[in-house]
Amino acid sequence: MRFRCSGIDATTRAARALADAIGPEGLVLGLVGPLGAGKTAFVKGLAAGLGVDPASVSSPTFVIANEYAGAGRKLAHVDLYRLETRDELDDVGFVDMLEPGAVVAVEWADRLPDALPADRLTLRIERAKDDPDSRSFTASATRRGSLAVLEAWVKTLHEIEIQTEMD
Image 1 (cartoon, helix red, strand yellow):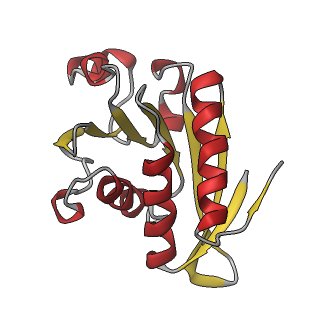
Image 2 (spheres, helix red, strand yellow; image 1 turned 45 degrees about the horizontal axis):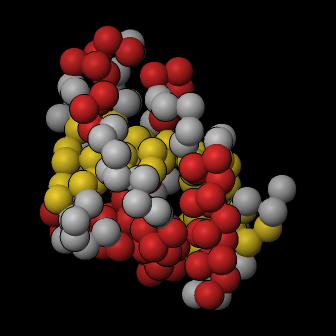
């Protein structure tokens, strides 16, 4: 599924819509994109949708992982940019973050894809070539749980008038 957001407000709305689409099982969200693409900005919108103050969300590049308590749900925000092995990820307690119901957003997910759960939603974010304030998003799901979230998210995006294209 692909869609485009013009500006940070639309990106925040799309991220909040994802939060609304996540069921009680939780979600692992792999975020992929170059520096400055908007991965952390998307997580801030996701946090807001989960009842976490987005101002408290910061890039975990140097601390590797941050955890936030939302309205009855935990948000873990992990950054793999500086990691090279699965053991390094295990050392920060990644497995413990995957508790049922948690939402785990993993920036630079393409660096250690085999260390992530098989059932995950992957979101590729890129700056639009024709507008520096716009972002292009490509979402893909791998298994039943993430597919259900993706389907619910598409419906929610349409409700907030963000047009999607299915692959």
